[in-house]
Length: 363
Image (cartoon, rainbow, N blue to C red; front, side, top):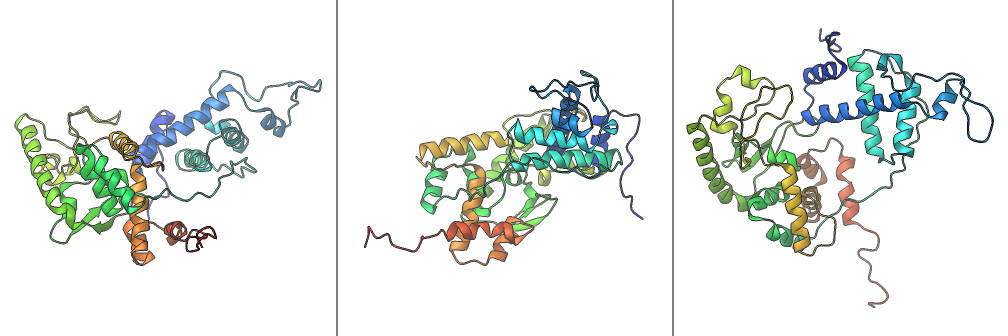
């Protein structure tokens, strides 16, 4: 019978207990860092003191600035860390409302903070958080994704810096997310079947997408250059690459094999990113920030006034496929969406009100 949850080592600090559970559940390093960011923010918030409203909910007398009532007993001492076991739904409700009212965060950001705290209580501490109650949530207006026309896409791709052109063209030609494209390994490309395997995408899902014919020759030439770089690293005693999960321990020489190398490696070697990993010089993939900056600069150079990011290329890929008559379920599979409702937003982009109606000024 599988374990319902991992019981972390009680001798570890809270940060290390969270890491132990998240590694056990194979959460990504980015999710791990994001969750700890919000959990630490929650602890800092509770250290500095609850809001007056939260204290009222605990039955304390609080001065509101107009009456003469004063706070008789603080909910907890100021400047003193409190363990999450000593807190509960009242503190969580106050923190989430603080994020919305004072920090003015987006609804998705507030939900991520809530998910992090619920994960801490349920999976790490094994406690029931209880009914949190009413939370002040920011109002999120429905927004359509920014989509480029085909002409705008070609202008932006033509203006991208040379070293990032191939990855940007691949993102638009396949609809991959930025990190999905940057994390591709050599073995993920199947030139014979004209397809690309995407592993551990969003939600730990694998999927297959097409390999554009126009990029096959360029990708093959690119891989020849990358292989020369890899052979040079091996000759100097390097050539290692990060492997997912425990593959590095199971196959101790696999991290030097050609098939595991990144298709888009960084220009230099760097140490392991995780603070608990043993420092090892490896060649990581291109940093996503560099691609984001390159796309932004290319949009400005191409004089495209829309908001343009690497993810805009994914939005444009989906919209253009639907415009070309492809079935929405096919587009859903290519994008890796769990729910077709997520894919349907691109039909709203195509079917803007009045799109097929001529203005009376033009009649």
